[in-house]
View 1: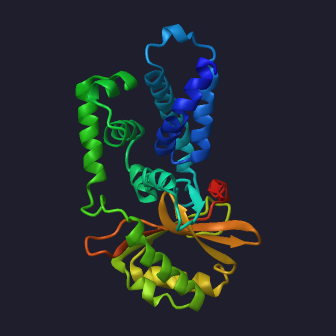
View 2: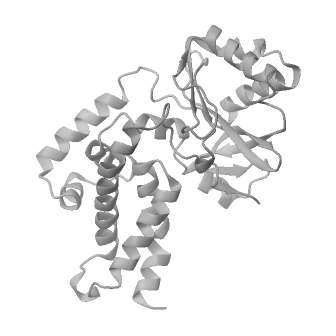
View 3: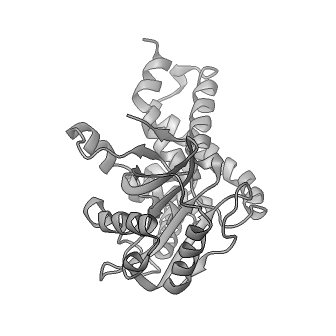
Length: 294
C-alpha cells in the first residue's frame, strides 16, 4: 500500500466528518475530501511533518473557501436552508460496532444549530468542542493566534447556548414516542396525540429548495403546525410508504412515493420537560440521495 493509499484509508472518515459538519452537505464533503487527496499527489511527502495535521488543515481551509462561495447561493435559496441528512434504513438489531458508529454521529439538530455560526466560528467550534483539539493546534490549522481562537470559540459557544434548551438533543429512547405518534397521525389523519407532545412555541421548518412544494417560511406555534400537517395530509402529501429510519443517528421518518424518497422528517431539540421544540422536513430531492440500505 502506497503512502497516499495509507493516508486515505486512515484519515478519510475523519476528514469526511469535519467537512460534513462544516458544510452541512455530505455530497459536498465527499467532493472536498476527494479534491484534497487529488492535490496531495502533487505534494512531496517528505515536506509533511504530520499527515493527519496536514490533511485536517487542508480540508478545513477548503471548507472555509467553499462556504464563502456558498453564501451567495444561500442568499437566493428558496425558503429555509436545511443540512443534507445522513439517512440509513432503521435496524433495531444493531451490532456493537454499528452501535458505536451511530453514537458517534452528530445529530441533525446539532447540524442545524451550527448554521447559526459564521464559517470561522464553526471551524473553531468543531475543532475544539467536537474533535477536542487544543488551541495551539487550532491556531496552527487556521493560521490565527491562540488568543484569537479562544475569543472566537467563546463567541461561538455563546451563540450555541443562547437557548437554554439548545444542548438537549433527542437520544434514541426519547425520540421513539415522537416517531410513533407522528406515524399514528399519518395513518389515522388525527395528529392530536403528536401535537400534544409539542411546546406551545414549536417550529416546523421545511426545505424544498424551490424544487418541490414546501412552506417557504418556518411555521411557528403548535396550533399552526397542526393546521399545516392536517392540511397537507388532506392533499395526499403523506400517501406512500412511511418508513422509520435513522437520520444522523437519531430515529426519524422517510416517505417513499413511487419508489423514490419524497421527504425525510426528523425531530430536533426537546424542552427540559420533554416536549418537542423543532420538526424538520427535508424535501429537496438533491438532499435525499444519501441513503444507506442494509
